[in-house]
Image (tube, rainbow, N blue to C red; front, side):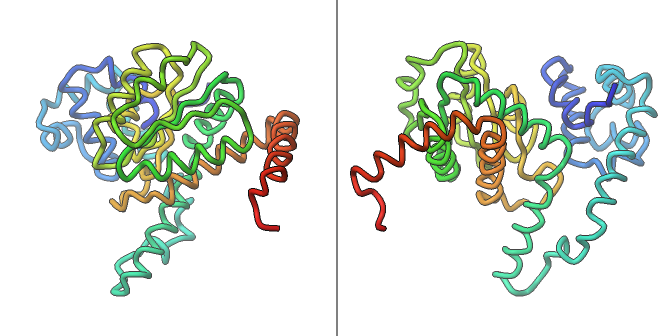
Length: 282
C-alpha cells in the first residue's frame, strides 16, 4: 500500500492527537527541513515539549519508531528537492525590483501546486462536485474574490451553484442543502472568523467540506474532508489569491475531463440564453 504523504497523514490524525503532540505536529509541518535531521530531543526543545512526546507522536501517526517517521520525512523532502532542482533561479526571490519579486513569488507558488497531495485531493474534489446536488461556495474578506471567481466558472458548467455573500449572513444559504451537497470555502491569512464559523457549521452538519487554503492545518484546512493548499511547500508568506484561482481552474478542468456530456447540455442552454438577452458583444 502506498504511503500517505506525511503532511496529509498529520492532517488526518491531528484531531486525535494530545495537546503536546499537536504542538510537535505543528512544528514539524512548518519546519520539515529542520525536523528531517534533528533528534527527538532537539525537536522537543523547539516545540516546547518533552522528547517522549515527540516519540509518542510518531507512534500516534502509525510509525513503528521516531526513526521511521524521520526517514519518511527525509524521503519526501528528497523528492521535493529533486522536483525543484530545475527552478533554482525562480526560487531566489530577493530581487530589488518589487514587481519582479511579486512575479517570481507567484511563479514559485504556482509551481508548488502540482504536488502529489494536491493532485490526489483535486480529483477527490472533482468527483464530489460532479455528484453534488448543490455546491455552496464561500470566502470572506480578501478570499471573497477567489470564491466569486470559482462560483462564476462553476456556474457556467453545472446547475445549483450558490455563492455566499461577503457579509456575515450565510446561514440562510444552508437552508436547502442536503446530505448530497458540497460546501467549498476559500480561506487565506488573516483567516476571517465568518469563514471558519461557516466551515465548522458545514462539518458539524455532515456536508462534504472542501477547503482551499494556505496550509493543511489552517483553521478550515484541518476540519475539511478535502483540503487543497497554496503554500504548503512554498513558504513564501505571500498568501497569493492567484494561486487560489489556479487551484479553482484545476478543479474546473478536472470536471470538464470527467463530466463532458452534462457540461455540453448545460452550456448549450446557457448559450441560448446569452444569445436571447444579448449578453455579449459580438
